[in-house]
Image 1 (cartoon, rainbow, N blue to C red):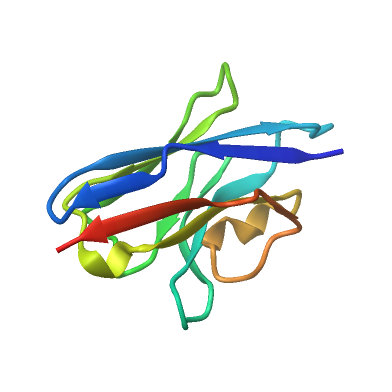
Image 2: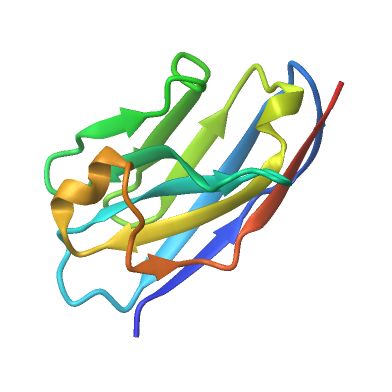
Length: 124
């Protein structure tokens, strides 16, 4: 059974930084797409940033390019989302998600496996 455990959310002032972590387990292959989606109150869920474990290819939503960075510790399998220059509009529940279909690293389509989510609140 695939499980995704997130950590690192919290309250931060605008302009600050937070780092989210996602530890996956249960994958039978080391090749999969994994990343972060978010859902703000009253809004649809959107892909934030995803990565391919095959070659490290990444994708980012336009709203976070230049501010957020996704990375993966290949030894641990843990995926990180470094969020800098946070804005109030980044406030949302952030979900780690993963899928064995590697092409889903483009982060535009829902994935098969989901974490429980971690709340990020940015105060202005």
